[in-house]
Image 1 (tube, rainbow, N blue to C red):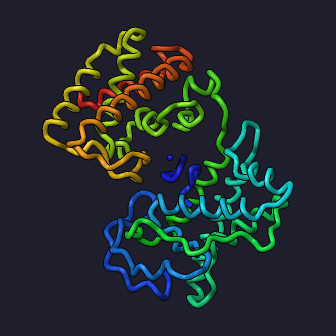
Image 2: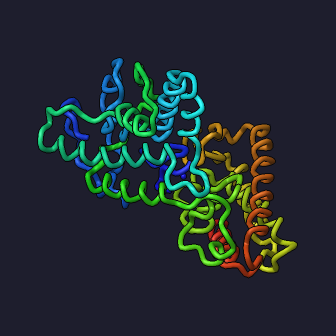
Image 3: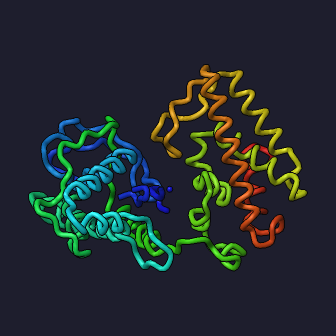
Length: 342
């Protein structure tokens, strides 16, 4: 999860046209974020060579590969740190802290978003101009924070795991990405106050409570199930557990959601439908859903049930007006919509 890349570069905003890429076939209409739908993958050799990655190519990586590249760059920084640089590097990569205007990673994400636009504009004027690189941006931001390394940390011979690359980001998409990143790095952190939870202007409050599954909570608050739909069995189990927790506290949670979720999950098992998408899809960190692996399903269902129960407790604890809170009312309505009761 923030722009589609929040949460968790994990942390992450999701951090173009090159002489080496063959002309792409006609694209369908761009999505809302300005990025056209996926095009056929270019040759794998585009990712070869012992050189840092250019931003235009970084943008084409699958999200998991983007995260992996940044993680490798972070490890390169740690490996290069000496003496007091070690503690300062760890502080730089920490999540944003309450009262902090912008974190080190926030500076990096913002600089990437700004550099991306300048790089695209320069490439349009002069296709032979050197392209901006991810590692150079990190080095620049580290230097601004007093962290100078010799030799400077870079990623060598990165191997992406996904064979497919996303379509090039358009200039309009890059400008929207910059706006999203600015909003994300400026976000408040720490536990939201009752006043903030009484009528939240957006769903960012879901990232500020210690939910087990903040992306599911965000989807339940907004009613946008685009991503979590890929993990329908997980979310159904999670929703059923949350409904059960809130049932004894709020009259509107009357058990119908639990029953509907259990019925659908039972049918999904009988029809041998995959329980979730392969690891690396939206919620991530879950193995490919083999509908015939009953042992795995039982273990995952127990985990999902526990997560839903815990998040129901967190929601109820922090909701300023408990059952009558706007966030609880909206989540209940969207839970009903997800299971088909609306």
